[in-house]
Amino acid sequence: MRIEVCVGSNCTMMGADAIIVSLENLKETILEKNGIRPDFSLEIEIVRCLGECKNKQSVSPVVIIDGVVHHNASREEIMSVILDAAFECHDHQFETLKDNN
Amino acid sequence: MKESYNDIIKIRRMVFADIARIAYDDIDLKKLGDETYRLIPGEKAQYRENIFRERAVIGERLRLALGLDARTAAETGAISEGIEDIDVDTRVYTPPLVSVIKIACEACPTKSVFVTDNCRKCLAHPCKNVCPKNAITIEKGGAVIDQAKCIKCGLCKNECPYHAIVEYERPCSKSCGVNAIGSDYLGRAEIDDFKCVACGKCIQECPFGAIADKSEIYQLIKTIRSGKQVYAIIAPSFAGQFGALTTPEQVFAGIRQLGIKEVVEVGLGADITTLNEAKEFIEMVPEKEPFMGTSCCYSWKLMVEKNFPEINDYISESSTPMVYSSHYIKKSHPDSKVVFIGPCISKKLEALQENVKDYVDFVITFEELMGMFVAKGIEPSEIEVDGKIEQASVTGRGYAVGGGVAKAVEARIHELNPDQEVKIECAEGLAECVKIMKLAKLGLKNGLLLEGMACNYGCIGGPGTVVTAARAKKSVADFSKESPFSSPAENANIKSEEILK
Image 1: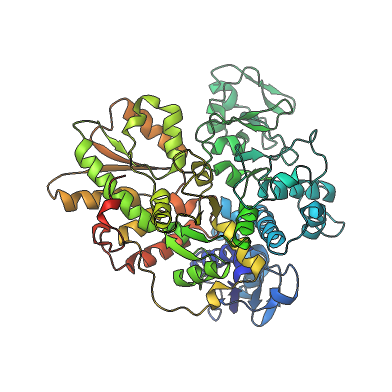
Image 2: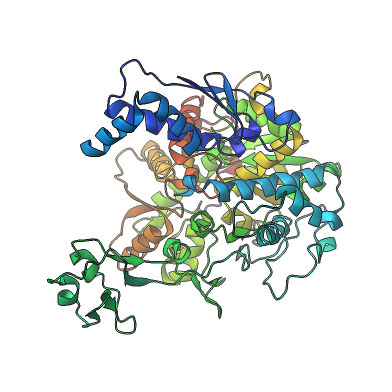
C-alpha cells in the first residue's frame, strides 16, 4: 500500500505533519510488531503541493492512498484504511491482536 | 498532547490564515462578521454543541488575532467593535497577551478525586480503609467520597483494584507551572496576569481551545504593504517547520516573497549571546555570583523575576538572541522595521519591554507565518534557491533544542579556559524551572550554569510551532551541522564591538 502525504503550505498548516507521525508510529507499532500479513507493505511518501487546494476550498490535508485522493484527511480515517487492508480477515485478526495484548 | 488536538490547532491556524488574507486583500474590517460564516459555513455544528457558539468563539479568536482584548459574554457586542483602533500599520496590542475566551471555556471542575461507575462496591473496600480523613462511605451505589472532607491525597485511588477512583485536575491549571490559573465567579478559568509569564502552555493544553494569545499579523502585513522596509529575524527552531520538503533556504526565499526585504538567523544573535554569557560566567562565577542562569527564554526570565527576586541578579545580563539579531540589522538600517518570527509567544511580551521595544517592532509565530504563506499562496518548497545560509554557528543553531544554550556557553568557556570545569543543569518546562530555582535559592546549585526553558524540549516544543518536536529536532540538528562556523568565535558575521552588551 502506498500513501502519499501532501506537505504543501496548506496541508502542512492543517496537520500533514501529525499524519506523517501517526503513520510512522503505526508502521513501527501495530504493523511491524504484530507481523500482519507477510505480503503487506506500507510505503509512506511525502509529496509537494498537489494543487488540490488551489481551486477547491477547504480540502487540506490531502492524502492519496493507492491513487485515491482523500480530502480533509484525518489520521484516524487513514490509519483505519491501512489497517483494514493490512488484516486479511480483519475481524479475526483484531481478535488475535486483542488476545496477544 | 498538543499534536493530538487536531481540530483546535486547525481552528487556530484557519484564523491566522484568514486574518492574513484580510490584510493582504484589503478587506474592510467592518465586515469581520462575514468571516465567521466563511470559516464556519453551513448550518451543522462541527466542533461544539451548536454552530452559533462556534461562530461566536471564532469571532472572538479573529478579534484576538487582530490584537483586540478578549471579551466576556456580557461585553460581547458587535464583532467589529473597537476595530478602528487596531487598523494601523504599527504595533498596537497591549497586555494581557494570553486570555481565556470566556464563551469557549467549559468551566471544568477544579482538582478532585472521585469514584467512577467502575466501583464494584466490594467487600474489602480498601479505599475506605486507607482514607486518612475517613471521608469515604460505602453506600448503596458504591463508594462515595465526601468532597468536603477529602484532602486529595490520592491514597484511595492507588488502592482500588478496579481502577474505579480517578484523580482529576483541570488541564489548563495543571499545565501552568506558575499556578496562574484560578476560577471566576462562574467557575471558568481566569488567568492571574501578575503570575502569568506567557509561556503559552495552557493554550496548548486546553481541550476546548478556550485560551488564546493576541497576534500582530494584521499590523505586520499592513506595515509591509505601506512600503516600509521590513526585515525578519527567524528563531533557530525554524528548520523543518514549513513543510517536510522545504529547505531553510527556501523558507528565507518564501519570507522574501511576502514583501520582506531580508531575513537574518536569530542564531547569529545567539552566537553573540554565547560569547557574552561565557565571558560573564568566567568573570562572575563563583567569585562574584554563586551561579549563573541563562537569559534567552523570556518566560523563564520573567518567572525568576516574579518569583525569586532575591536571586534574580544571577540571571545573565547578556541580551537575548532576538535583541542582538535585531540590533545587527538596525545599526545599518536604522529606519527599518524588524519582525521576530519564532515558536514562542512570550517574545511578544519581551518585545514590549522598555529596552527591547525599539529593536523589535513585531513578533509573530511560525504558525502565524504559515498562515501568511497560505494567504499569499506561497509554496516555499517549490522556490528555486541558490547558495546556503551562512549566518550562525553550529552551537548558535543548537539553541532551539533544550540544553543547547548551556552546551553552547559551556563549549565557549572551554575555548577560553580549557582547564575550567563547568557544571551545567537544564530545566525544561516551567514547573521544572521553578523547581531548579527553589534549589538554587537554597544554595544547592552553586557554581553551576543553569539553563531554563519554559517549554518541554526547548524552543522546538513552543506553542507557536507547526510540526512535532521530534521531527523538528532532527531538522534543527541537520541544519546545525551545515554551518561553516563550528564556534561562535569563528563567526565571520560578528564584529568584535558587538561582544559584550
